[in-house]
Length: 269
Figure 1 (cartoon, helix red, strand yellow):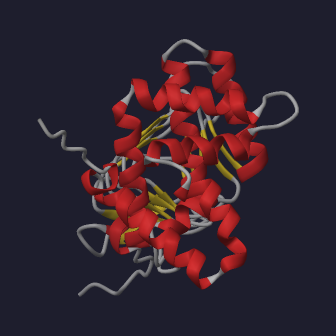
Figure 2: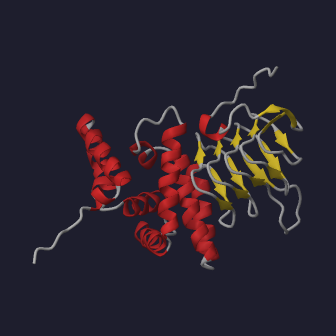
């Protein structure tokens, strides 16, 4: 009886697209051939490629790449939600970032995407009770990417962090699905209390560059926070807030601000 073998790329269109783009990249720029083969084409699945890329970035003299890769592969094997979230983050970056023209780019070059995947692995370790190892992932991600996300924070799927420099997300923060934020965003606390002390960001929220959201407050779904704002009070859904301290200055401007990435406040009549 003949045995039918399924090519993993055929069963996984996201990975098939990434590998196709990788081969095209090697053809266009042969000098990147070694990097692209080691990072993408050498691996049979997106999970293995993400494990390789994350371990390569986070390894140092204290923790080898091989050990970190085994940890990452263990996490992806144990929790399929990690793979689903990675695919959603990848699609979000491609759809929302005008500088992203291929799925391959976040995998290889975009530290926002890579930092969020490192956080997701740290969060898995945290939930498994492996807290010190989770802190190691957080520390190295902060050192390598400039993104400091506490492993206990809860981030949804479809997260896009553009430029991803100086991002801070605290321990009890919650970020919903399909949220977009730019560089220098802080989701922080307001004191030394140890209880629930960080913001709760609803689905579809757009957070502008340099915005600070502080304290255990709720930012309603599909709202916008203008660049440079300091948000200290709850934000209703579908509103735009701006200023220091932030105040409501209008409606969100569209039904999906985090997807449209529209930061402009227009006069409403």
